[in-house]
Length: 288
Image (cartoon, rainbow, N blue to C red; front, side):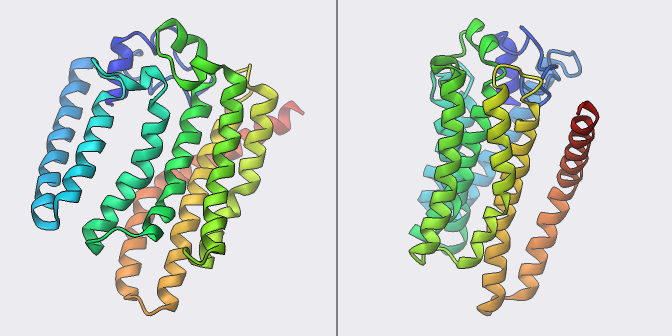
């Protein structure tokens, strides 16, 4: 919401709403008039206040590392597009997503429970951050002209669509490399290789992107495949650790409760993605 709000104020997502590619161009709720900017500002301010309250509680009960990670997270969330920093407009937003959606969130959650940091926790959560980098980059490609016109110099806006496609491919190589390498070094359980079930989608998204990065509408299937691949990779890592836990005497009731909550939270998303994927396949078949 913060990103949407300040992009709207900077006229980034007003120049050409993301109608050509439904996976880019912001949510469109402000540019379409569905939500008033002041209302959105109030809502995300309340969210930040709740976050800060939870952060201070966890700092008092679990230690100062939570404060440090929390400050990084809040700073990046606010100033991704908010002035005077707006580092997302200067080619640093992608790296911030990598940092926050991998190590900051992952290690923060791990430290709250384990009261320590480990190389395993770092490597288990790092692929999630790299994949967010991938998602941000591929979503920036259709928006490159609008971003440049509004002065939002993302990595793709700075270096071009071809460079963005190469960065996307490189980030997926890094994601898979971290998982395979960590398993080979016996840091991550072998079951986490289930995350690689996403590879067919990854390869298909790369093929589509390379063929259509100049056409926002035709590259939309690559954006969808990216979302699906991210989900499958993430759930593959989770499933791998679930199996590892069961085989090593973890509390099965706790595991069932955690996985049930996760399924309840993401089931609506999974249904939506499945429907979108089927629709894409039908359109593709019809066009052929």
